[in-house]
Length: 178
Ligand SMILES: Nc1ncnc2c1ncn2[C@@H]1O[C@H](COP(=O)(O)OP(=O)(O)OP(=O)(O)O)[C@@H](O)[C@H]1O
Ligand SMILES: Nc1nc2c(c(=O)[nH]1)N[C@H]1C(S)=C(S)[C@@H](COP(=O)(O)O)O[C@H]1N2
Image (cartoon, rainbow, N blue to C red; front, side):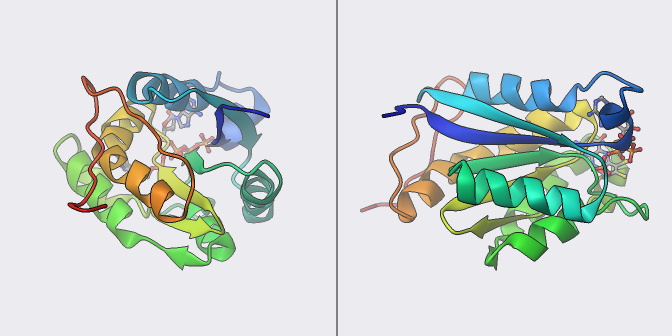
C-alpha cells in the first residue's frame, strides 16, 4: 500500500508547455509543499497549455484516477482570453470554495495591485481539493502559505487521513472539538 499522500501539481502555461521557458511553476509548488508538509507526500505532475479541455482532463485524471487529496495548479488565472484555469476548475468541481480565492487575492494585494486581476479559486471534486495559484512563480509560496492552514481540516472533513504540517512554517487550524 502507498503510504504517501498523492498531490497533483499542474502547470498551465503555453510557453512552458512549448519549451519557450523552463517551467518554474511546478517546481515552485513542490518546493512550497516540501517546506509546509511533514506527512510523506508525492507529486504527480502534469504540464498543459492554456486549453480548457486539456486542463479539465488533467484535473479529472488526478482526482478520479490518481486519487489526489490535493491538486494545486499554477497559471492561467488572469483576465486574458487564454486564461481559463478557473473556468476548467469550476467545470470539473462539484462544489466551489470561494474563500480560498478571496484570501489569496487579499494576501497578494500586499505585493502587487494587479492581484485583483486573478480569478483564482478552489473547489472539490469528490475527495479531491483543487486550488488555483497565479502563474507568477513568486506568487506560489505567498498564496499557498496563506491558505494552507485550512487545508488539513478540509481533508479530514471528507474522511481522509490527517495531513501533518511543519509547525515552524504552518500551523494547521482545527476548530475546537474537531
Ligand atoms: N510555468 C512557468 N514558469 C516560469 N515562469 C512562468 C510560468 N508561468 C508563468 N510564468 C511567468 O509569469 C508570468 C505571468 O503568468 P501567466 O500565467 O499570466 O502567463 P501568460 O502570460 O499567460 O503566458 P504563458 O501561458 O505562456 O505562461 C508569465 O508571463 C511568465 O513570466
Ligand atoms: N502574489 C501575486 N499574485 C498575483 C501576481 C503576482 O505577481 N504575485 N500577479 C497578478 C497578475 S499581474 C495577474 S494578471 C493575475 C493572474 O495571473 P496568471 O494569469 O498568471 O494566473 O495574478 C495576479 N496575482
